[in-house]
Image 1 (cartoon, rainbow over the protein chains, first blue to last red):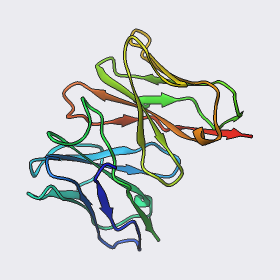
Image 2: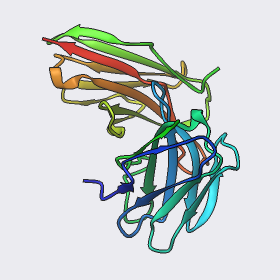
Image 3: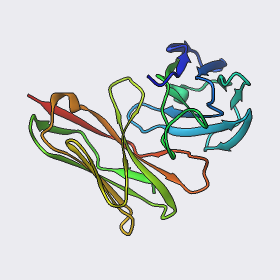
Image 4: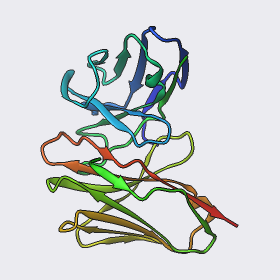
Length: 116
Length: 111
């Protein structure tokens, strides 16, 4: 058990809408990374938050934004949804007191977003 | 060119077969290397880290060749339960642990 939860598990939205995905982890995970995994592809890094500040970003537009809270939960927000945003969204908390040794990361179960 | 490239799949093998997956990475500054396993509609799970000296975990052997920028995973005596997608993953120095994934190779082990 990784102690990481994500909500909701599944979500259906229409183009142009906004969505908020949530990730919760046990205490000590001061870093959280978010990934997008389209069907048939490997996960792609969206961004990382460390101590509530963005700490690195992948090749994703500004309509993808995030928040990290003092209680170690985090959110991924996506505005103006597009059909290509349909994917599995994964969070990976890590940091002192959590995660693995070295660069190993453990993922939450993911949120499957479908945009119609 | 993709940063991490894997053999295209799917691989369909009979139970008991030995199967090898190959992966190449483009950035010589890559620091850490992993194989993850992903079952259908589930999150990726760490299978094993890959060390320069090569490492083995039961039926699984991983090897790294830094000079060729090449990683491999060998599965011996395949089981039905090995059916999954195998993802090659690297990290780069000073990138905050960002994981860079290959597209994955699907393995199907048949009775």
